[in-house]
Length: 157
Image (cartoon, rainbow, N blue to C red; front, side, top):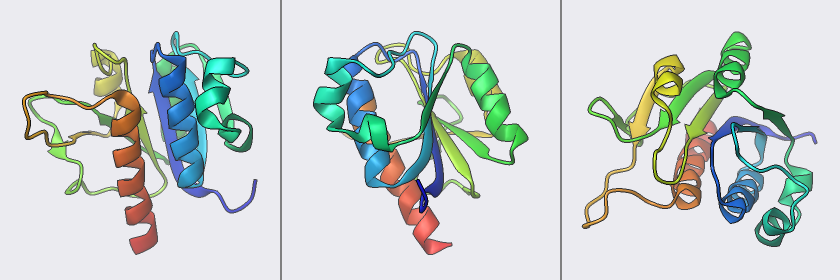
């Protein structure tokens, strides 16, 4: 589809097909260039994905790559900056990171997050500040926050 923006999502080991569907729907909302489904992340066609994605699993280009490191390397080889969304001791605030386009965000497992080897392969790691008692957002919600930040970056370049 023409008119896609230089934003990609790498979905690593996300178990819930409903979360996968929500990520598709948000990726469609920002006209992301594509989604890489990796690890044990489920792929369309699945009724659970379709139920939440509402057709975005058809409109957003996607591929399945078993190994997240292959997806990361493939994008980096094409000049895409790859940034993980994860809380680590060195994570930058997602609003202050020096993004460059094209850009991809790696989001990970609902409990375990992005794997250490994937973090090491990325160009940077960002996090969404949490002020409440819980230390993280649901992966689909966090993906939405991050994708709309990347949309803001694209629109301001």
